Image (cartoon, rainbow, N blue to C red; front, side, top):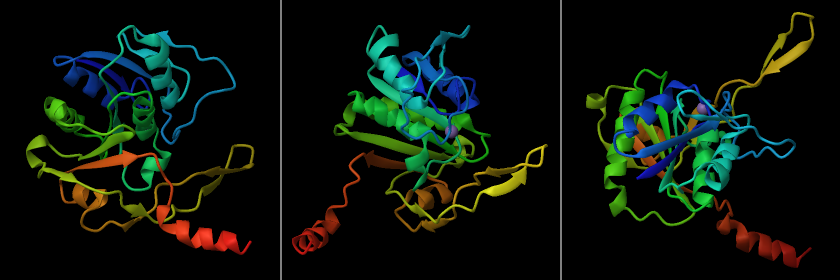
Length: 247
Ligand code: MN
């Protein structure tokens, strides 16, 4: 099996090397990742300048672009053999609920799927003590992947509790939960007294009941949420259609 790995935490992130190392005995791995932390890059593409991929001593490709740039470049140009699958991660921190809209990890997986490859986003929900747990979960998922027929335009978003493998309770199929809006930006001053703003952390969990990704991870389970890109709200069609008749 040939696998493309990418991430949004950057080519030097510990989660990426943990994943590359764990998979190296079951697959041929190509790593193409941003040259720095691009968490929160979402699905952005770099359009205002050319990209400059560099091969590092460990064989990883470092790209001065976004996670989406990396997967786009890897699948279209850098890889001589087209991969069987794209895996993004292991992200430092959860990608639950609304996080998926901001996440570069999820975006990298979506780009993989957009270009026709089965794709997985994998995140470690915690401080980053047990990347090995998430890496072993990916291995377990891959071992059964040939029996799973994920439809086109669908990726698997996997979140793993940051605990030793023997403390994982199991794997739950979940839906996305929902966060409250995040806190206001933190206002500060630079050394010259000018106002600066640091966008603050994530919002509190709001829709986090049973069945959600939040609930599963909090209860010690691995969460797997199938994600699709179609954000159309079909439920509101009738309402808008009748409104249009009066406009
Ligand atoms: Mn990240």
